[in-house]
Image (tube, rainbow, N blue to C red; front, side):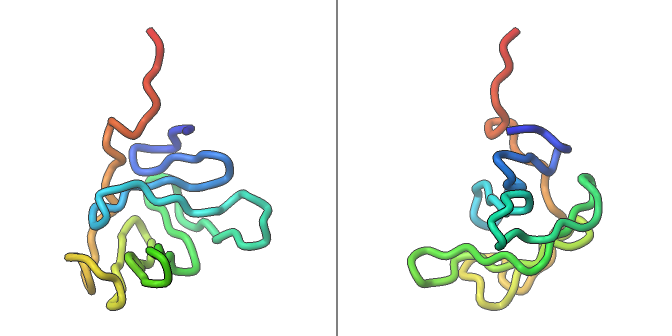
Length: 102
């Protein structure tokens, strides 16, 4: 994964960020040329994408949010503790970045 900023990575056309609600990495297709790519707006330090992002488990929505102006705005159909809350996009924890050889 290429480090774009402390908050974003890029891997195979997917924008990578950490979701504190899911306590995991989310991958958003932005440069995959699949015809289903999200539009990245903002900057790598204050990012946004559109449309909203929905993460499913089976057919059930697990996480649904809008990433805009460096903030994660969790929607009311998300199924975790941050429902209807807005929080700053956190840094990606160090354990998710590739280890570099010395």
